[in-house]
Image 1 (tube, rainbow, N blue to C red):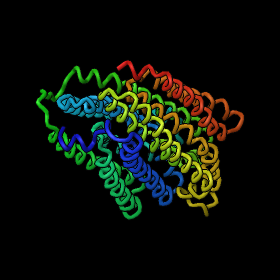
Image 2: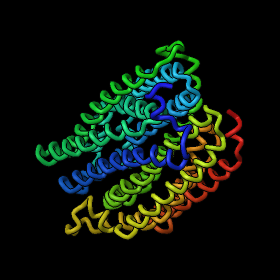
Image 3: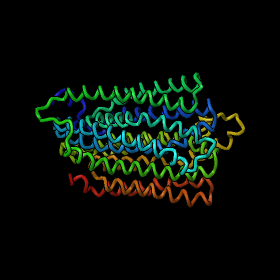
Image 4: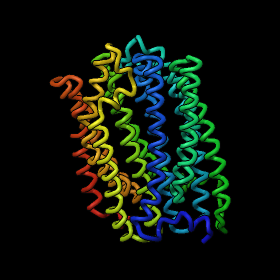
Amino acid sequence: MSSESKKHDLTVGSPGRVLVRFTFPLLVSAAFQQLYNIADSIIVGRSCGKDALAAVGASYPVTMLFVAAALGISTGASVVIARHYGAKEYGNVKTGSFTSLISSTGFGLVLALTGYLLGAPLLSLMGTAESIMKDSVSYLNIYLLGVVFMFLYNTCTGIFTALGDSVTPLILLVISSLGNICLDILFVVTFNKGVEGAAWATFLCQSVCAIIAFAVLLIRLYRLKTDEPVKLYSRKMQRSISRISIPGMLQQSFVSVGNLFIQSFVNQFGVNALAGYQSAIKLNTFTVTVMATMSNGASSFTAQNLGAGKVERIRKGFKNCIAIMCGTAVVLSVIFTVFAPQLAGLFLDSSAEDNKEALLIGTTFLRIVSPAFCIVAAKLCCDGFLKGGGAMKEFMIGTFADLLLRVILSLVLSRFFDVTGIWMSWPIGWFIAACMSFYYYKKDRWLHSN
């Protein structure tokens, strides 16, 4: 085994230590990415007002459709490549990497073109207010220019994770996030470009980061020495990746579609409700994304160890992983619940009288949803091990149950409790889905079917 492969081998050493060492950079990466998103909203909201914040927020569920598709493809590539890496089949690692890079960027291009055609009608269908429609469409169209780069970056990150390397994505993301914040300040505050300035800042940093990630990945793959044949594109490898990525992509996409429905319910309560929702949902997304990123790390750990035939090591790793993730969730729950008014107030000027209602709505959201973070952490931990074991059917059932419940409950409860009823659907959906995911993990069949 080469020194390059030894450094990122997740099949040796104490499972707890390995997971902490591997997932900590992933956690920091996710935190930086979400801190950028939060900073982006803070800069727009405080510099341009609540209408601008609502305009960016209105396009958020649509942009998350593209992110969902990219994450689904990245997951498939990561799981398959990690399994070959654990089995020391480095020729297949290279073939899988090249195949996933080609297919994901091609698919990203198709989705970007589709977005240009359907983006504005979709925003209208969601009930986006006319007062913010122009800015929302403008933000979305500029964002779409960077979709191909976003797909490329996420695929590279998935491959790095499959190789047991969580540090390189962290370094790239820190550089990208800090650069993005600087460009936000330059374009939005200094040049007074408003919503469009925020979109251009995202596009520029996302593109540069993707190109750097691609170059570093090529160097990393070149250093993996193998006598096995390597192909630039393999249909057989594509089928293996698609078996994981298509369900993952559908799952992520349907979650985003569910969020579209939920936001359409929120839109019915006016701009204040949407602005308050956006101030809180970014913080909620921060936590869920951190947990989901750690879950992806668990998937790579599981896949590498399955490739190496070390089933008992996976069981030990699960106990360590759920302790790490739930511990992180408890800390975030306490912070977000106790400091909810101050955190919601980061996005809008709390001294302005016309922002009071929006801030109250955001605070209420955080205090209802944040105490349930430990539940979603447990669910995502189970999901990570199920994905790593290729149990996509079980993984999707639990996720769809969460999604369906949240949409139905949002519709029903909002009729009795107004917009607060929508927030109440989150903890209920998470709890039921977490029970289902834990049940599928404990069934254990997925560990022996690969």
